[in-house]
Image 1 (cartoon, helix red, strand yellow):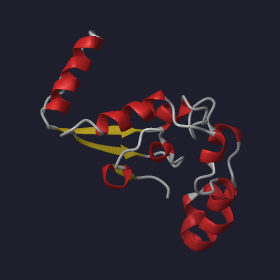
Image 2 (tube, helix red, strand yellow):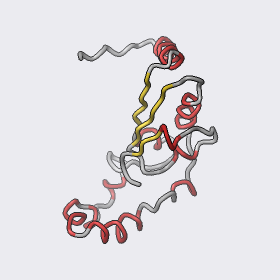
Image 3 (cartoon, one colour):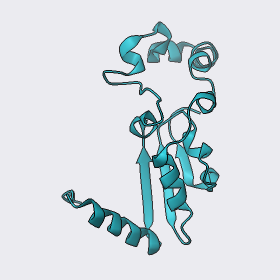
Image 4 (cartoon, one colour):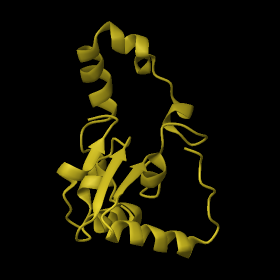
Length: 139
C-alpha cells in the first residue's frame, strides 16, 4: 500500500492513536536504540556508537560462524551480560508510556524491540510483557 504522508499536527496524531487503541484495533510499537538512548544507553551504531569506538575481532559474523557457543560465551556474555543494563540504567518515559498504553482496557498492543537491554520489561508500570513484547535481537 502507498505510504500515508506524515502529519505535522502532533496532537491530532495522538488523538488518532488514542482512537485506534480504544477501538481495539491492533497497534504495533517497534522500538530500537533511540528509545533506550534516552535512558543513557549508548547505541551500537552512529557517531557515539559502541562500534565507532572499538571493533573487536570477535564481533564479526565469521567468528560467530566458526563456533557459535564459544562466541556467545567468550564474547557476547562478556560484553553484554543478560540483565546487566538494569543494574545501571532505568526505563525512561517512553518505556513507561508504552507499558501504560498496553494496559488500557481492550487495547490490542504488541511491542517488537531490537534492544538487548531488557528495559521494556523493567518498567514501574506492570504490564503483560511476557505476552505482548517480542525481543527480536539478543536474549
